[in-house]
Amino acid sequence: MLTDPFADAMAEAEKLIESAPHIRTEQDLLEGYQYLAGGILATTHAAWATERSHPTFISGTGPYMKMGLDNPDTLYFGARIDDDVEYVVTGLRGTTADLSFQVLNGNYTAAHVPGSVTAFDDREIDIAPDGSFEVRFGPDDSAGRRNYFTLAPGSSQLVVREVYSDWSQRRGTIRIARADTVGTAPGPLTRETVEKRYARAGKALVARVKTWLQFPEWFYLNLPVNTMTEPRLTPGGLATQYSSVGHYELAEDEAVVITVPKADVPYQGFQLGSMWYISLDYVNHQTSLNVAQSQVDPDDHIRLVVCERNPGVANWIATVGHLRGYLQFRWQRVSRELTPDDGPRVEVVKFDEIHRSLPYYDSNKISPGDFAARIAARQAAVADRMLG
Image (tube, rainbow, N blue to C red):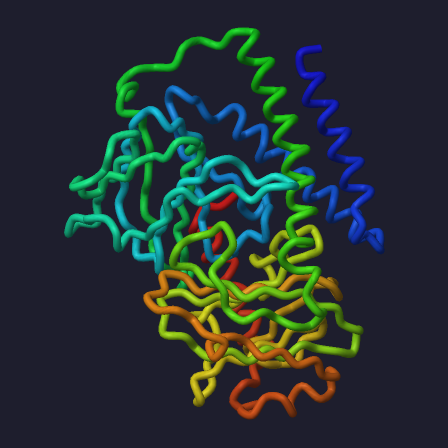
């Protein structure tokens, strides 16, 4: 059958999920199957929604298509590109904290992190007073051309990130077109192209599962448990993004208290991830917080409490049944080098002793009703972003 390559790939991916080394419980496995479903959605969408001759931005990760420790504060858009043609990217700047562009040569694989050919945020481009902009990417020398960026040999992906600090910020618009095909239509489907798309989706699915099972081994699991690195430029990432990473493992009566300065940067956010290297449910639980959402103590520090049970404080980060997982800070759109003094301090404490690690504990407390209102605000904000 024409779809056999994709069916075979799904079976292979399922075996990879079932044999993942971190699985300890039935819940771990069930979440793996859910993760697999998201991968199937994403790879089939990418295979069928994109045309080399007529590119479009698509979202490869979101609440139901998670991968790569997706940031709950970010909308991700990507387009496949060739290095020998010119692309026109137009849009309207929203009110989000950051809008950034990155050109990659290749894909993430289980053995390779793609090179970042070009990476910049919207401070590098001219934006009209009404928020509109036009950026061009192409093979020509960009010297002297504002809003034009040269595609280096091997350029294959254009990734755009729109990053929210306050989730009520207004999203912008963005689109891409090939300069030589705009105003025309792609050719009709053929049996050969359909076969290729199913095969491409299957290959991408297996690679996606393999890659993101391997990725934490490189950057997280070789670190001592319940620690976090000092801020560092994100590997393979944006020129103006720093990150601090770690992994945690707690007993049921333990918590991690993380203390971090409020940095002088437009975006600073923290999140948890499961062992599948994806975000936890950030819609219905507070599994992430950025500065705009956090309670900042009078000493300009943010104190986050990571644990399973609700400790009754505003900055509770819920593990949602995950006694093991990943810890991640991101600082974006930075204009200075971050130092260890900007990074987090991590302390493991008994649940009943949490208050001893919170010097402003009395002002950190929150009622169940007020905390439920925080969750309701998260649910409404994600719905307003129309993510599905």
